[in-house]
Each structure stands twice: as structure tokens, then as C-alpha cells.
Length: 255
Ligand SMILES: NC(=O)c1ccc[n+]([C@@H]2O[C@H](COP(=O)([O-])OP(=O)(O)OC[C@H]3O[C@@H](n4cnc5c(N)ncnc54)[C@H](OP(=O)(O)O)[C@@H]3O)[C@@H](O)[C@H]2O)c1
Image (cartoon, rainbow, N blue to C red; front, top):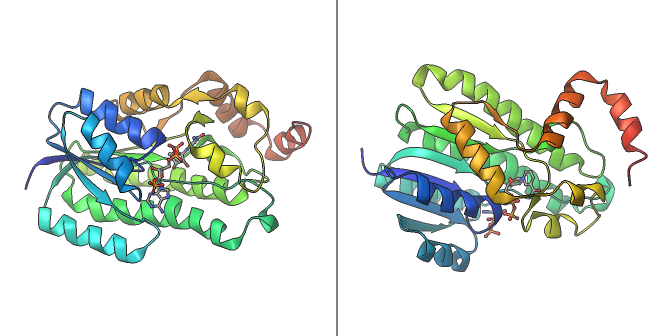
């Protein structure tokens, strides 16, 4: 097997980019970081800021041909993937019937389909003690009106990641689902194209570096889930303990 690689999707922005910075600083045994997203210019800019060698892999994860090209690239390189971070993702808020179907399906394509396929493609190249970090969301804890498809995709990511974590334990490969609340990235400006977020989301928005630092720590500790920030942990517990009908009722009064 070849070099020790970290593969990061969504590396052109937000948390994916922050994972690249922190892995670059913390993981001295990584020989190369593979940066995946559509915007090549952003990946090139990022690569210049990193000390670790990089490979820039411009990829549209919603395009099956691009995923096939990625599969062939893996076969050619035969890498030793030490860390896979699936951070690419997107969401569109708004009433289900008002958000165009193309946008609804793009969430499923990237958040669910591509994450699943990339995980499957990378697994044969992952040695013992490798890590998979999947970006889910606190939206995975509870169905969300006006964010219905997005929350459903993130429930999938959480469920899939926890099951995979159990499966891969015998192979000493550890999976962590990261479940942040609102994070200060380019996510919300795009998400607000057809509808706005609950105003209180602004009040509990946290910086990306804090979420990523905790995610890498929890992944190191082989934790199945990483939840940063007390209000989000409280929300997780409430969603587990309280009847969802009751939470939906309370949320009707939050603007
Ligand atoms: N920000 C939040 O409040 C928040 C909270 C919980 C969970 N999350 C999740 O965290 C992850 C990272 O989000 P973020 O906040 O860092 O958002 P972001 O700044 O908007 O970054 C999203 C990344 O996904 C990539 N991406 C989107 N569509 C793609 C496609 N078709 N092919 C390839 N790459 C694609 C984008 O790259 P290109 O545009 O260059 O392709 C970009 O690098 C997402 O899965 C998101 O759902 C975010």
C-alpha cells in the first residue's frame, strides 16, 4: 500500500476547509491530503496554505461520472487512507412544496448518496486504526418542518454512521458522526435561498474551528458521535426523552 492519506470532501469551504487546516497541523504521519470539492480555485488557494502535500481533486459529488473517476483514481493510487472526512453537504430551507425538486434531490445526492458511495469506495483502502468522520447535524435528532428533506438526509447520515461504526469495530476502523447545531460557514446563506431559518439559530451559531477540533478529538477517542456546545447537547437529550409531538408544539411558537 502507498502513502498515508487524509481524504476530505467539502474542502473548498467551511468545516471541510477547517478539517484540512487542523489535520495539516495535528496529523504529522499524514503524507498527503486529498482535497475534494467542485471549486478548483478554492482548493488551490487552500493547498497553498497547507504544509502537508496535497492532491486537488475537483469533483461534483452529485455526478455519477465524477464518482466513477474517483473510483478509478483510487485504484491507480492504491492509497492507505488514514482519515476520511465526508464534509460536503448542502441544505435548502423552506416549505417542501416551495423548494424546487432539483434542489431537494441535490441534498439527497450529496448528503446521502455521495457520502455513502465515497465511504464504500474508500473502505478497501483503510487500514486498522483508520478513522471515518461523517458530517451529520443536530437536524438528525428530530424531523424539522421547513427543512424536511435536509433533516431527513442527516438522520440517514447519523443512522448509517452508527451502524457502520458497529460493523467496523472488528476491523479497528472507527466512525464518528458529527452533529453540530448552526455553524458560522457559507452554509446558511445558500440554505436561505427559498426560506429563512428560525431567528434563534443566529444566537446559537458557533465557529467552525471549535466544532472541528471537538470532532477530531472525539474521533481520536473512537466516539460514535460528536456533539459540540451545551445547548445542542441539551437539544439532543430533549429529542431523546420528550415526545416529538410535544417538541413540535413548542417549536410552533418559536419564530
Ligand atoms: N453550517 C452549519 O450550520 C451546519 C450544521 C450542521 C451540519 N452541517 C453540515 O456540515 C457539512 C459542511 O457544511 P459547511 O457548514 O462547512 O458548509 P459550506 O461552507 O457551505 O461547505 C459545503 C461544502 O460542500 C461542498 N459541496 C456542496 N455540493 C457539492 C457537490 N455537488 N460536489 C462536491 N462538493 C460539494 C462545497 O464545495 P463546492 O461548492 O466547491 O463544490 C463546500 O466545500 C455539510 O454536510 C452540512 O450539511 C452544517
